[in-house]
Image 1 (cartoon, helix red, strand yellow):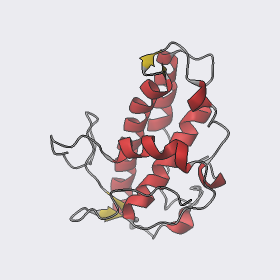
Image 2 (cartoon, rainbow, N blue to C red; image 1 turned 135 degrees about the horizontal axis):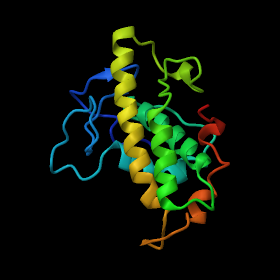
Image 3 (tube, rainbow, N blue to C red; image 1 turned 90 degrees about the vertical axis):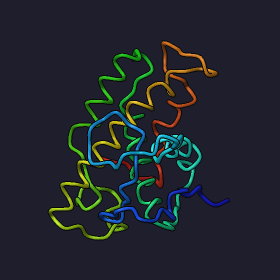
Image 4 (cartoon, rainbow, N blue to C red; image 1 turned 60 degrees about the horizontal axis):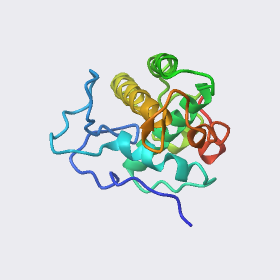
Length: 179
């Protein structure tokens, strides 16, 4: 069974930096993301959160477009976020921990410390700063949207994290993890 790929692979007229498309995000966080169309109900962050659990079971992933590169980055970050959560954390503590993780040390795929940097093309220095800001904005959105998902059981808010999300703490997408 093949892995699930991004529906944004065919996104036209989108600026691409380091192989990552600067897609519009439904967000209130300030950043370089283009303004999203008000009718947009599902963006790249929603897609990554939906596909995380299924794709984390795969060891191989064939990149079919720029949208897949953003999906890979986001899946690796979600895995890193889950690794920071503990079963005894409250939802408020989780928000603080994940926000801190999202805004500190934003690694871009061009950095040597990124686990899959060989899958991404080189980036110019001027573009690297804009990409770092965009990925920082994506990371903040992931952190904001992940906490309500993890802290819900059968669609109802919960005080403890869901075991069905925490079971993916040790499972990494493609066997790789962000440092």
